[in-house]
Image (cartoon, rainbow, N blue to C red; front, side):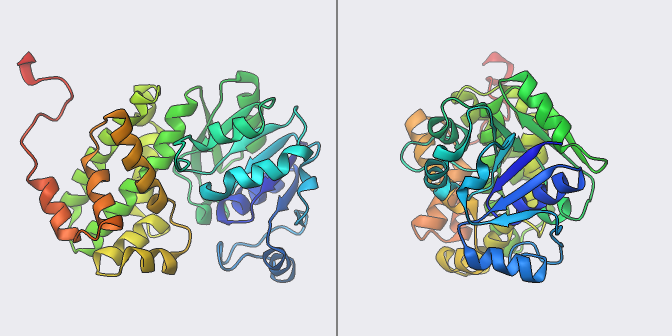
Length: 335
């Protein structure tokens, strides 16, 4: 039996907590919000973030960060803009023997660090791993068959995570490309937001297929520029996560994009949906792509929609009327 502390009582953190509790582990969930913890205690669920999914009574709930002391695995389920702050507060309680398992997705503003890089700075003596892949919390919490990866440079730690989290409905694969897993999991939110805009504009399957295919090319280019392995983007944390996030109404990024495509302002769309990781990530990815001189036209046009007031139809026109080129990176027939 492993001792697991989940920092964050949002949808995915709770879904993983339920999964691990069902698997016989000792699980504690922390939140900074007393009201949220009390609501879960009284009603047995977090109806605002994971409606209809009951939280096992055996899962301990707390607002005290000291709960992370002596945990075998500390799961980071904090939205990316707040991750560093929570990690800095938790650092005094976490043993250097604890594995830090990041599930947050995004790039830190200004530094452009991935969330696992942020975690490593806060916990320099700990092994830091990533859990990511096509895994809507709404389905994980209900025991719907799901496959993900855990990416870690420490093989034994990765195997321990795999053993701890794997169930008959939650399958965990191993991966050694932490950067690729992080970039795939973060940037898919940008493309899903764009896919939602296309849905809101009333476009069809052809448009979405094109957007997703060219989107994974952008993600791959940025990932490689940051040191990731190319093959990672063909797997669960790349195209797998992109498919589920672009195509499902569980996706907050897609739902926000739909509202924007229908004429709702980006700010109001984010306000209505709640946490939309792709909104902030678009700004950071756009700036990072410029810094690294990586061509990311979809991200650039989405940035224009979100932050420069560019009409969505105009952004699509810009993409469709770009100079003609080859699909692959190499020159066609070496010309």
